[in-house]
Image (cartoon, rainbow, N blue to C red; front, side):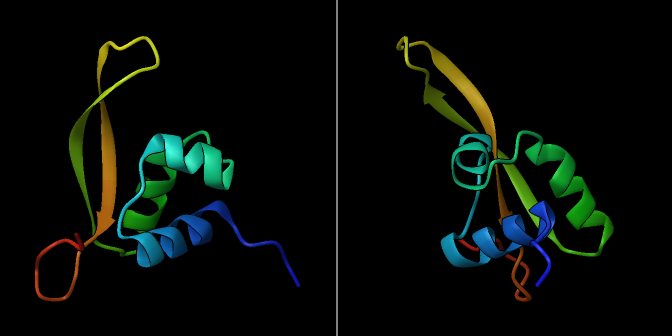
Length: 79
C-alpha cells in the first residue's frame, strides 16, 4: 500500500479536526510547507478558507499565523 501524500494527510486532518495551522502540520504530520500543500489542495478543487490567528511564542511575544479549514457546502467554514 503506497504511503499517503502530505496533501492527503492534510485534507484528512482538516476533515477530522476542523482546521490545521503550521505548527500542527509540522508536529503531527511532518509537513514543513503547509501553505504550499494548501495551494496544491486548492488547485485540486478543494475549497479551503484561511484566516490569520493571533498567538504567543515560547518567549511570550505576540505572533500571527494562518489557520486553514475546509469550506462546507452551505458556504461557511467548518468551525
